Amino acid sequence: MTAPSTNAAIPRSGRARPMAPDERRAMIVDAAIPLILEHGAEVTTRQIADAAGIAEGTVFRAFADKTELIDAAIARVMDPAEALEALSRIDPGEPLPVKLDHIVTILHARVSRAAAVMGALGPRDHARHRAGDHARHRPMLGEATEVVGVLLEPDRNRLRVPVDTAIDLIRVLVFGASMPFLREVDIDPATLADFILRGIAAESE
Image 1: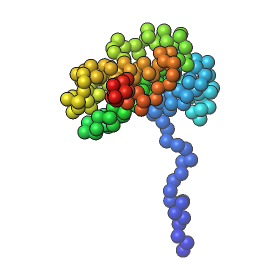
Image 2 (image 1 turned 45 degrees about the horizontal axis):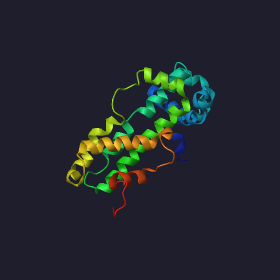
Image 3 (image 1 turned 180 degrees about the horizontal axis):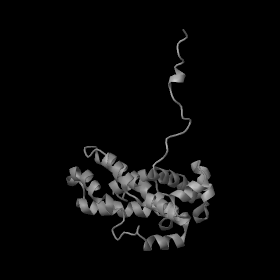
């Protein structure tokens, strides 16, 4: 007797597992963000659907309209969760220069991405964003204060200023260096971290 085929014993539906609504929304937003950076508010739902590999109608089953989708993209780039998770993975026992380099790199990437998206969308979406549910009256990068404080605390005695002041200086300098309209030259995170650590004067000064 011929043995049954192994392949025949494995059912094949030929279809992928259906996505939960939140997963589908997240997938569409992931596809939308690079297109918003390229096209701004003129991006079309057809372009987004094509990039996500779905029918355009699926976009409108996940979002009421393009404005709601753009708002979801803004919420994603403004959400500090990813940056906070990355900061939490830094070892407080690392040398101060190493920790500072990681901190500045993570915060710089967060601000730069948000600034790029909002810059691509233009003034109208800036105004709507400030007036909407995403607006927050808190210091820039204020959500990182606690975790950065934990990272700097072991080096308190090596700092020229109190930890709270050091955190404020880091936040202000990272924010300023990440804003295209506030600077005339590009400042990479490594250069900024070294500047924060050593200051503007040469070692011999």
